Length: 64
Image (cartoon, rainbow, N blue to C red; front, side, top):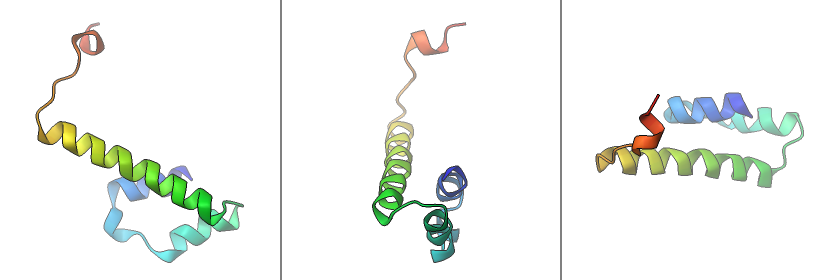
């Protein structure tokens, strides 16, 4: 699952059916694969929106 999520995040254009089959082969259902894909895609989307708008981190996040 984590290898799938990492690949989808870093190299989305390289995804192939074999990536989905690898998840199925270890017991993930099609619904599970959809859920994993949706979560990864949502975070990619949300991060790009924030980056694209130049949103700064909250000060409490960046304090040491």
